[in-house]
Image (cartoon, rainbow, N blue to C red; front, top):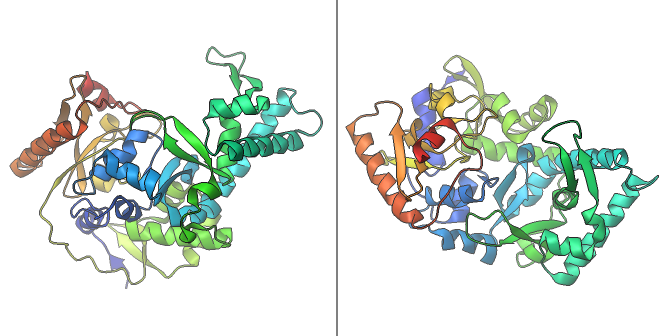
Length: 396
């Protein structure tokens, strides 16, 4: 008999598994709870951690990122930058990033050929440039892109993009080459330059950045085994869910997703008429006993970005909270569902709007949490990288 899982059960599990009803003890624990934190927008990492770790401030996150290095920034699923637990890096590398790196290399080589760069051996030219960059990085220990461009002039090679478009133009290949080297696992984004909302980072050799912990050594696991392990972790955090949600989240093909699930002990479940999968042995849906809490999550938080099928926690609020390319803005959560959105005004105040009537307890809890977040942000001003309709309206 197929197990049926209700929306109420899924919402309760979401709150418990994602550390929204009961905080995690550490930033690393909070990151592990959702597999990885979105890091396309640097502020998201800090705000996502704050929502899940009691007493967390920016220095707490900095400690995990830059001192103990228990969490590390890397390109991962869907060619998106994430912060992942350091021991998970080789799994994400084999499961997702290797494929991303191959696509990045293929596209860059194509553009170099079109631009007349590299002569008859574009692949060799690019490999030689990458090797020179890594030598320069090793000599410096850490470096910005500008410093590496000064050391290796080929990084300043220019290509013309979309010359017939108003938004086209000429650009250096610096960021593309450095991103490719990182996607191949040879260097990592290290300490930031500027405040905690800054998107500027120093590059570090991967081995040197991670060498203080033997548990972070690269694994010899093949891609298929790595995909199975990543699927297992996703199911623990985001399951039960349709297999298509895993495919979307990981950026895999249908065949890769099917093979990853076939390697695991999974059960088919009924999600209110929609087929889903659940990790065998994870059938308990016990309430964690935590009192209802209001959660103000940042733009691109891993919880709302964990599924492609979102109606069971999003309701009708998508047009107000998402941009046109599928990026979510800041959201308000109550009892495992989205009930509103928030933004920071130029004054520093956190303004919010409830998009449905969640009751007087929810309204009071949201008001209190907005005041706490205002105080936590202090003089910092945050603007999501991807603006959404409600966020723009509230921040005005």
